[in-house]
Structure formats: C-alpha cells, structure tokens
Length: 240
Image (cartoon, rainbow, N blue to C red; front, top):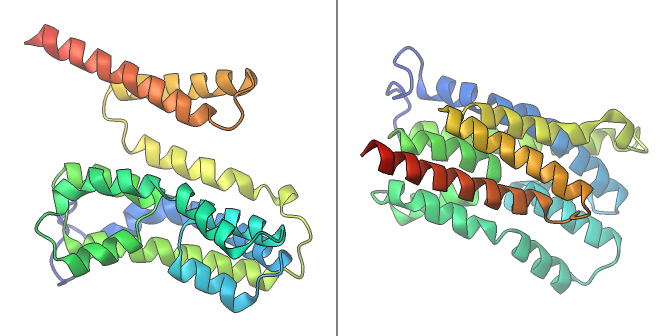
C-alpha cells in the first residue's frame, strides 16, 4: 500500500491524515470505553496480559465486556466462547454489506480488513465505500487508528484500575452513545435519513418504557428502516 498517494476524500491531505480525521469520533468513544473495559477486566480477575491480548486479538467491545462479565461469574470457557460467538454473528451481515465493494481485494487483504472491522468502523466504511472511497491505505489507516485507540484505552484502564473502585460515577457509559451519534450525523444526507433516525430514536424510547428492555433498539431500528424503505420506494415511484 502506497500511503504517499493523495486521499480520494480530500486532495489537500494525505490518506493517513484523512483517516485520522474521519476516525476522530471513534477515538473519542473507544478510549473511555476501552478504559472501562480495562478496569472491569482487572476487577474481574483477568490478568493484565490477557486483558490486553483480548483487545489485540478479539477486538470486539461488546463481546469483550460480556466475556469479562461471564469470566467474573465463573462461567465455563465453552459458554464464554459460545456467547461471544453469537453476539458477533452480526459481523456476517456487515461483511455481506461491504463485500461487493471489495471484490478486487486479495483474500489476505480481506482477512486483515475483516479482523479489524467493528460496528463503528463498519458505519464509517459503509459511507466511504458507497462514494467509491476504497483506497487500501486510507481504509486500513482507519482500522489501525481505531484499534490503537481501543488498545490504548485498555492499557490506561489497567494502569488506573487500582485507583478506581467504581466506574459508574465517571460517566464512561455515555461515551459509546455519543460516539454513535457523531457517526450518525455524518451519514444524514437527506431529510428522509433524518426522519428515519428520529423515528428510530423515539420508537426505541417508547418500547423501552413499555417494558421491552432487551431488544428495543433492534426492534425500533427494523421498524424505522422499513418505514424509510417504504417511503423511499413510494417517492421513487411517484417521481418516475
């Protein structure tokens, strides 16, 4: 990969500078959440080296936090592996969505890309790839910067774990929703997109208050996306 080539996003900046600029919202979310993971892992009895290795090799925030919780509860290794496998099944859908844009890539390059893909980088790449921005240097720059932020947050959490007894008063749990809001704003290209986002947010809140505690976000997203698709199909038909 030749990083000297100018980014297709901006001719005034290099691919790595562009990658950092695009990844900044993810960095601001990953560092505090990775910090929380590092603290929780240490409190759960996971060794420092295993905590860092999980961020390097697994690199899946929700799965790591779930695994740490199961480890602390004394769950069997097979149960931990099976649970995190099910949690990460969504990566099959994300990979299927991005695969058409990367048909020219080698299998080795695809394997490295899939290893570093997360929910947040998927959102970023989906937006980029749709605009034809599939340059490997910028793409992998985004992935490496994002993972570095997560690992860095993990290391900081480990270092501070002896000083922190409870992470809840710090408000680190707000970092993840804030990061997704920042990523969402970059993908709102029309009033229809904004309407779908608002509908999903309102529905999610209503469903949660109605007692649907575990799947209110998923249900609201599916309903709002279906409404948006229907409106888009209807408006397209009317315009033609």
